[in-house]
Image 1 (cartoon, rainbow over the protein chains, first blue to last red):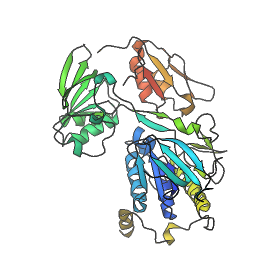
Image 2 (tube, chains in turn brown, cyan; image 1 turned 90 degrees about the vertical axis):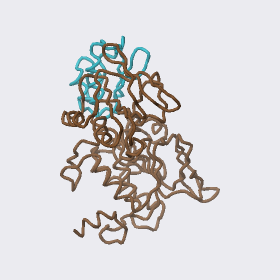
Image 3 (tube, rainbow over the protein chains, first blue to last red; image 1 turned 90 degrees about the horizontal axis):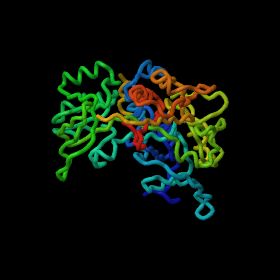
Length: 347
Length: 76
């Protein structure tokens, strides 16, 4: 567990979406040590949850980039600075420390995993709130450890019978990804039509993925380990489908949640007012990205990147009052850059 | 597959981005206020509209719509 004055980081970033990841990179570039927290088990925030497959056309330098690729690039960009990631944890409370006792003024972030992250400054990059995956009804009786809401590695699925529940792009993309390595892949979808691209649906069929429409997972069969799920069909009949692991691609719900209680003067229950330094009404607390508001605010990823750099630069002044606001151009420093980017520049 | 006997639709309008996807999918259930943010016109639509309501929920880029059955279970 982190926490306490002695091991506090320079900057704790709440939210690992595009803005939070870029803030982590920029803080690393400025020589600050960083912790970054997100409620999702993966980085990318709203982009990873809602539109990893969609093409984004308004990020500078990328005429067209998929959400997933943009996040992968941001992850690569921040990687040389090795921030501490606290994924799958939601920050519940933010408390201030005056530093009167030990001279280490700052804040403590308390997560729902009982982690306490001590930080000299905080940047809230919470977007539209924390995303929670929609879950299968508890009546299905599945144990939490047998159900994934993201596919982040193929390893747990090798030679397994996989049931994917859902009909969107993620459900079909994961079916396509897993079918070459899994024992079998079955997609169970409540409705008779898929939201996923028709091309993905026909590819899945060609790859031998079973598609069960107008069907629901209503139960499970355990013999120590998960053996099968019960699927109820539109005509009321039930079938038993072999299953060692379930992927629930059922979408997400977003809520601002605990941030509303952090005394940040939230407006309209959704936005943190900030000044030109991206500072909030709380000392040492900055904000960036879609969660912020000010006169003339435009909620775009590209704007969030700029706000992140401003927030980090001003947080840096709080931590190191003697430091310049502007830390120089990345072209003029020996700061490490992600390897493939460096190679790309040479090529 | 049993259809739910009653539906409840909830939309967190304070997080709406005014994309209009919900209104396109289920125009008798979702409307908008004077600023364009989502407003639920019919919080308990007929179960016949289930497909449309789920389509509206899934088309929301901000994930602010939830649909529940009579027992308060979120429909997936």
